[in-house]
Image (cartoon, rainbow, N blue to C red; front, side, top):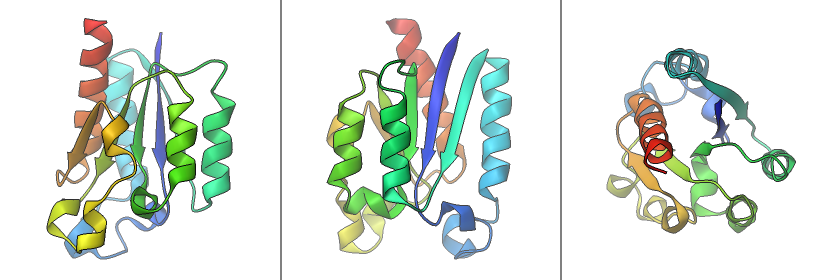
Length: 147
C-alpha cells in the first residue's frame, strides 16, 4: 500500500481564522478530511503532521528515514523562505515530494517568492487554495504509477 506523509508548517493550524481573505475559510482539519477521503478512495495511507516547531518537523522527517513513505506533500508555510534545516532533512529521504502553498507566493511580498524547497520538489502547487493538497496527491499518485 502506498503511503503519503503530509507535513504542515507554522500557523497552518490557524486556517479558517487567519486572514480568510487570503487563505479562505476552510480549516486545516477540513483540508485533512478531504485529503483522507481522497487517499481512502485511492487506497493510500496518510500520515498527517502540523507543527509550529521546526525541530518537531525535522524530527518527524528523520523518523521516516528507514521506512520512507511513497511520497510527501509539504506546505512549509513561513519555513519556505527560511529553513535550510528542513530542506536538508527532506533531501535525506529518497522519495518525491510536492510543495504546496494555498496562495500564489509569487504574487505576494517579494520575500515570499523564494523557496528553499522548490528546486528539489517534484512539483510546486501555489495559489489553488485547499485544492492544492488534492492536486499534490494526484501528482504523487501519477508519479508512482509511472514508476
